[in-house]
Amino acid sequence: MHHILDEETTLTARGNGVYSRPVSTVFWNMQSAFGGWALALAMEAVKAHAHPESELSSVNAIFLEAIGAGEIFVEVHTLSQRKRTGFFRVEMHKGGLEGDLLFSADFVLSQRPETRLAYTATMPDIAAPDKAAALAFPPGTGPRWFGHYDQRIAVGKPFTVQENPASAVWMREGDGRPLDSKGLVAMSDVPMPRSFFLHDTLVFSSTVSYSLYNFATESELQAIGNAHVLVESDSEYVRKGTADQRARIWSQTGSLLAVTSQIAFFRE
Image (cartoon, rainbow, N blue to C red; front, side):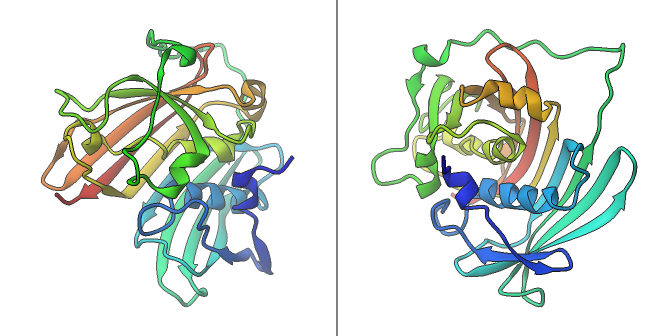
């Protein structure tokens, strides 16, 4: 079965760790490509260079410029490939390797052994997906990529003035695609900007710096299939054109899959 995210992250190999493809208009934001698509595309490129048994541990990315329409070139640098851990840098350029640098991300992939020490945070008590309301933008205002995700909001109400910008949303890919690390990376950027939960009008923002720390193995993600996962998001600071966002991603069985944070700039 074909899935939209896989179709929109296919790459043409150019040799020496270089790939290219057109910027996806399917995962289009308001004026440029969706950041989650760029992260998933970078993950796809890294997989071709990492040890086949290694799994995603972390991503740290910066968005230097908007990823506009046209062809982009993706270059993977292997910084270090050790027995258990690989370090990679992915850069995206506009039109060719001599073009403007749009995006850069550092990936760590590793083989993680079992240990006797075992601690994890506890999942909050949240209404089940079938008890939560569908999440949507006001008619005619949402980005194109938003429609590719089935989202049900259990905590928070966007486009209202809340005391704090917390939210909890159940989400999954809308075409039935089973979860994997590429899908998880894309999904980590799906939460609405925190400004949407502090104002009754749309105050859009642009992510400039992003981090994700992944705890789930591919087999654990595979077991989730296309079931909803919970993305619990909040912020410490939304003012002076700057907003931070942190999120925890949970399985329905209470496993903490990943945590993520980012900083974004906004204009009123």
